[in-house]
Image (cartoon, rainbow, N blue to C red):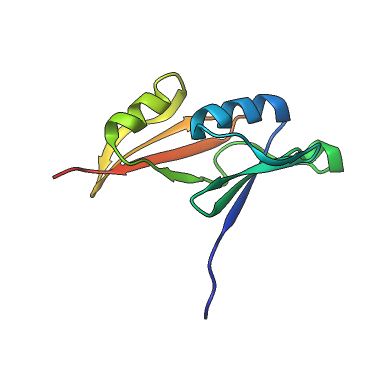
Length: 117
């Protein structure tokens, strides 16, 4: 089988709030913004925000999908999550430092960085 994953959609209740949250986290502007959402290009991976209410869909927020974002260093990762609501504390798991936070819309987001030797 030949396949790859190149994008992820997360649902958002308040699109403008979510855009501000993720523009701060990713330190870049959202691309292709419309009333339904938009996306961020993270090294070729498209991280989409989807304003589900615009198409009358129902969704559940929380930990049913866990996007995982890798940071280059522990210091950078700590800086980016320092003001976030932490739902899984910084923990060394195998060869990574891992934590989870809650985004502006109630979604759980994992962040990790390799343990430096």
